[in-house]
Image (cartoon, rainbow, N blue to C red; front, side, top):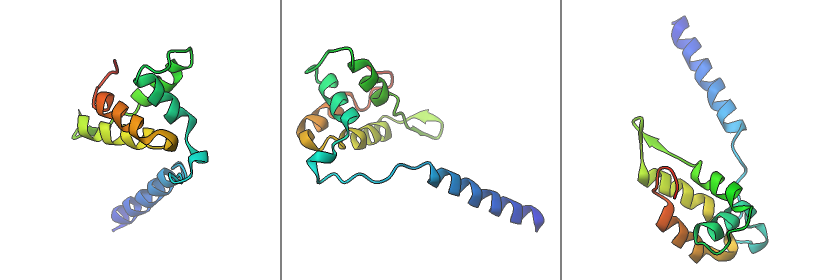
Length: 109
């Protein structure tokens, strides 16, 4: 019984820590609240910008990787990356196009 109680309390503590690190929700309806990194990643992925800042935007985009049962999941990775570039409210169509092209790739270009 003690072991089960300890496991339950540990689970609650872990869930609380995980929730505390979560980012606040973004309002995707206000163009003034676009995420600069998401817009930069979109432009760099489509080749519309190749300045020195592309490295940080692409690194952030391609660092989003999801697994299923310990193996790389292209569909889950694409969905997570799509959620990231969707934060670029000012250019949703380009964000979708960029994610359709690169969203499921494992290591980038």
